[in-house]
Image (tube, rainbow, N blue to C red; front, side):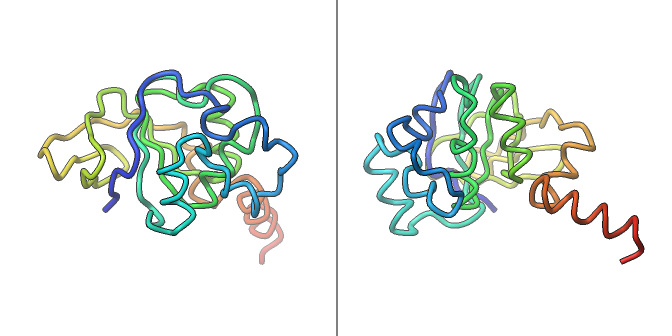
Length: 165
């Protein structure tokens, strides 16, 4: 069960997710501290670990638009958040997949902060409202990368399988 910990609208840019002034920090172990830095209350909740792994951010269309900075995905992955959005910007989505960030495309999602969501392979069920919303599935190859934890673990697994280990 995922709790909605932050709700956003359409066109959330990578500069909102990971402000450009922190671009000197690129290590995935260091980027999480700057997630939504300009949203002081939410950033503080993240830093104080008041947000549980697997909790969800819900957003509208074009989440992650703007620059191609990978840090926008890595800072969210650092908290093991799920992002349920009506749609994602293409480059952000690929960065998120490569890093193993749980991204769910749900074009009709309706949820508010505090709502409890059950996320399956086919649906997002808002347990608070009782409504069910269909997921637009990722291609199997992309979902396999997320399920493996990202492109590097996925590739490592494939190489080991190929060599019988």
